[in-house]
Length: 391
Image (tube, rainbow, N blue to C red; front, side, top):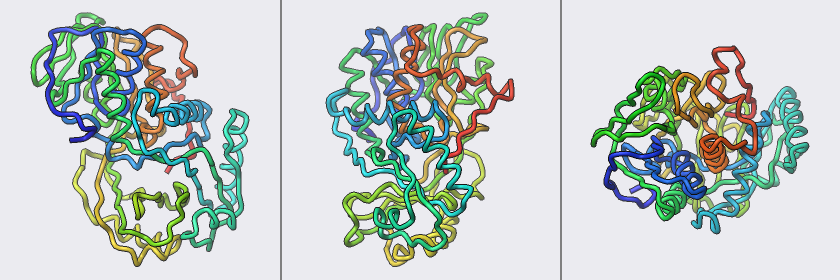
């Protein structure tokens, strides 16, 4: 089972805080609340911990963004991932091999040059590099057509299941209750005050709900009249057979123009690509319809991979918002409904920092970064938050 945690757990009659969703976001929130001394925390997961989008993630961790809030969330999380063995106390197989963006137009170079300058002002060591330097870092890359690259040396990748396990184990140790195999089917309110969550295993009285339900968030929020514009979109990943002579420090590499990416996975590579023909929906089955597009890009950017076999793969869900930025905040129209969702592909890497933020919002503290620009109300005011460094 994902995160090594079995199904079940006794469902209490009431809780001070109910967290919906047992991925990295939900377990991080549970840990940070419990660590701060919050009592009667209940996390509900309809399946297994980490079984939603988290365990299907590529595992990349970075602060290479064009938006200052995303940079801050990524940087804070990188610090947390680096110290994860001590707090909360779990080996997560962190490889700080860097993030390498390959750029094939002058417009892309200028875009990344601007975001690199912003990251540098915020203390991040990201730098623009030449195509030759990029190929030295990732020798399987064919340089044809590239005009530049961007490298973040402190970024990398780790194991999502281990992160969930670490947070879940520590949250339980600190007194939180985590119940799996328990689906939330509705939320009750009297006036504008929450009173209970209804589940497949009974009703729990509560005055606070934290939505960390990922791609399933929109329907949950709608049950109490809160609009969270989150759309599920399938993304697929494959894993290759062993590849001789892969550099030990091969970076997480993204061909920005095509969205083709890869990083080391054991003796082979984990490989993915954004499929522009993918239609929104809860599609979790694996298909081969995107493979011809993948092999076409491989033929141009990493042709040696065409001779490598595949050992497996999986499909997971992105949780997409209209501006591809997260929804983090507390609802205005009902008390108290908090949310951390809609991360559009960078939720795993921001999980540690967002756990801190939601803890502070719940406790009426000032978070380490102002996340008010990510409140869901921005869409009602046409205040979309632009993030350009995503694939």
